[in-house]
Structure formats: structure tokens, C-alpha cells
Image (cartoon, rainbow, N blue to C red; front, side, top):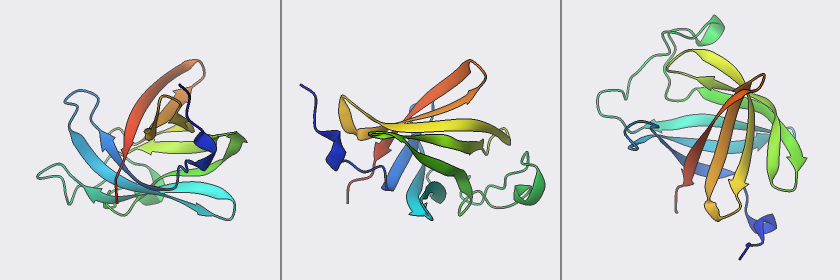
Amino acid sequence: MLMDLSAQSVLGLWKTIDDVTEKPKSILEIYEKDGELFAKVVEILVDGREDALCVKCKGPKKDQPIEGMIVFSGLQKIGENEYGDGTILDPESGKEYRCKIFINPENPNQLKVRGYVAFFFRTQIWRRVSS
């Protein structure tokens, strides 16, 4: 049974999950500004990484704290519950990718976050943080 996703917003707090360990890594806040979506790291959940710096980043984000950093920006609505045409930063590698996000049709408390280069992509599942 498909749920009505039109009432589901991508805005709010989301927990990122490590692809390998499947443990929570961070909490991000997705917010809208001037018609575009942004995501900011509001808390790092990995012990010992709370004060981590983006040592592999380039430009103004180099050696800046990851907590508080904007990791995706410029996303615009491109479908019913889909946003794209923006970029996402992987603070671990310092690399930026084109980005698309959308609510999981099977579970509105999951956000699919896809970073891609050409035909290669990786999709992560972020989990909604309940209030």
C-alpha cells in the first residue's frame, strides 16, 4: 500500500547511518532558504569525532569543523517528493557530488540521499529523527 507522501516533508532533522557499521554517524538539519534546500550537520554521534575537522575539504571548508558545516546545498524541487540539481559534500573524502534526495515511497521516515558522478551513484538512507 502506497502512502500519501505529499504530506511528508524532507525538512527537519535526519540521522545519517554509516554504510559499513550501520551505526548512526550524525544528525543533519534540512532547511529551506530562498527556495532551495540545504543540510547542516547539527551533531556528530561518533565518539571521538565530535570535534572532527574537514581536513580533506578544499577551499573555505578546509580544516573547518564538520559540526555546523553545510554539507548539501542548492537542491530544488524536481518532482512530487524529489529534490535535485544541487551538490553534496562527503566530509570524509572532501569530495563534492551532484545530489538528489527523495522520501522513500515504502517508508516516509526514510530519506534516500543519492550522490552521483556521471552514471555512477551511491544512495544512502537517512532516518527521520522523531520529535
